[in-house]
Length: 329
Image 1: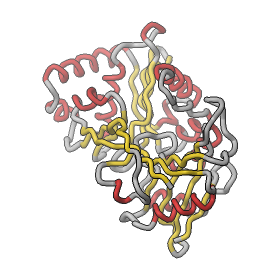
Image 2 (image 1 turned 180 degrees about the horizontal axis):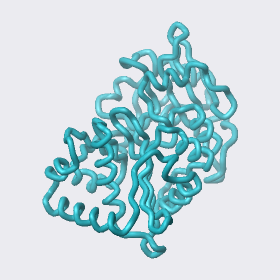
Image 3 (image 1 turned 180 degrees about the vertical axis):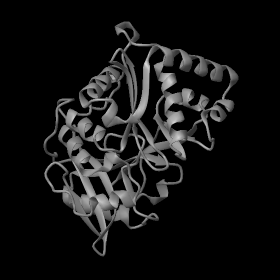
Image 4 (image 1 turned 135 degrees about the horizontal axis):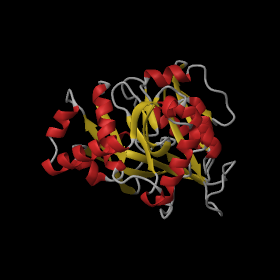
């Protein structure tokens, strides 16, 4: 197996990258132009390892090259002499940073790790693998070190033919509350679900995400905001769905969904605060609208993402536990 290491900011897209992404069933966030836009705004250089067997691309690993920083928030345009390889899915905590086409290839992760070690040099001391599900640790190369639990991922299977049958499995008080709010909100606001490029502009999405990010500024390591070029590419991709709430044209709430033939992913949510003219309870109503859309579109399920685990569990979602594993080199 041969491994090709790429910096999406500067290296051209491999000719077979899109074919590999489609064959592996990966969402639009792995499209090369989105990886490039993400890499140009990231706070650590992004490395993309593409594994090939007999010349054919069989899988990939994406990682941020994290070195000690003197200033938080500044963009690091080059890697330092020492650090840690942080394997994660760019711009999406609901996916893993490694994948392959077809059945798992036991040689892929060891080969990519060896290639990164040779490329980075002796100052780089190990790998952090994020979003590792139970039972997956045995597939990771090297001897495991520190293991830390991360927020569970909420996934909702959708075996029901219509929304009423989903409502029927909920707690009666929750069901009545959601139905009542859905009717009231639909009477007050314009609520639409459809191709993102038809419903929202990148400027609007950026403002809404910035509004939502303000709630999480107290985190120790808050995620950097997605840049406007990234949102432009995402919204115009044809693989992103938007849920919008508007009052007299003003956007009050927005959810972006990474479409997929089986399991779309709820990527982000943002809403105008009530004290600034927003509407109460849009967060809860948003789940009803997204589930209704997914059932109507014939999807097998919906990945509701991380955070608010109790709320999502009340909606019938399964909480999938995961960990971050540090593996020394």
